Image (cartoon, rainbow, N blue to C red; front, side, top):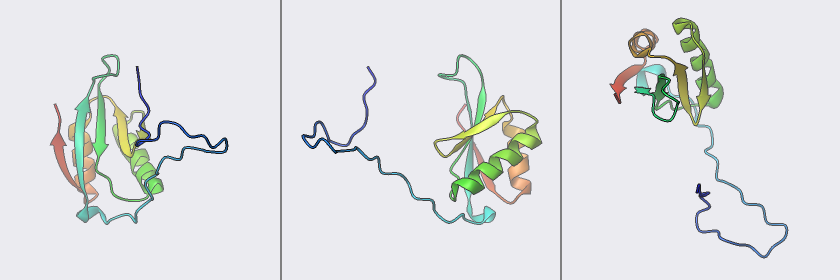
Length: 112
């Protein structure tokens, strides 16, 4: 059974109580040369489909989504942004590393 992480809150007698999850505030986007992005290859929990994940981006959500659009265009495939990670459909690690390196990002291949 999947449990919700509520940081110790079990029950409240207040009828107006609303549980609020602490959301991460957007940070200012670091310049590309000061960021280290990890490129992962993953298929677990995706019905056997392989995806490439880009993790470790520090910055605003809008900038992350803009970078995801550029990566998707360069790879010619679909993808999305979830949980501050860029998800690209398929195995495009080498292509993404080359693309990000050309844009000035430091990259490391991680995972599989």
